Length: 278
Image (tube, rainbow, N blue to C red; front, side, top):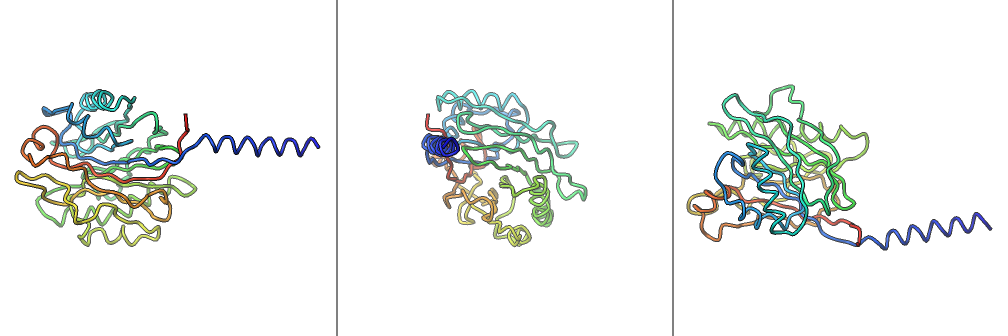
């Protein structure tokens, strides 16, 4: 009788715990924020633009101070607490180096640990990709950021894209079990380019989530190129709802947007998650 009572207790406890969870959607974004911390920006506008996302991976970060200014305005316009994680040192050339950073709502997202920089033993990348583990609701994942070379030749960009399968494999193999790897960033190539063929033919069924018909860079007279994307494995990242896109904050004023915010649009994916129903 005692064993039956204990079993019933655990079943009821499990059902109660599940009832305290609710289905929600979360938003994971990537944003080339254009030399954050080294140039004058409208941080209030940035706070207004980005506060609906749950976590944003930043490309082109030049100082922690710039990240902190973004945090201040995200908290102001979302009425939520935010935190950040920044890569330990910048990468690039002797003349030009950048950090990667992540900012996230602490209510829905937890920082788990750094996965550090990709070990680029073959010197495939001018700026090594950087990864960190997070948990959004009940979904844990490794978020990898990359700012690919622009260079004087398209062939340099293609060469980096052709090495992206190595990046995926490296971060995937850091976990002995399956792992959700999300690779976001500015690749300076449209996904129509054949440079992505190795990544997109991976056995883990990797897809791009931002349509090649969506332009993500801001020119002086309009939206220009599709250089930004987020790659996921449909084998593992089953939480992806199929909804994704780019947030056009320009209101048709492209010069102002480039000067005060960035020359790129933030891109995002939507995921299904379970969160505590407080």
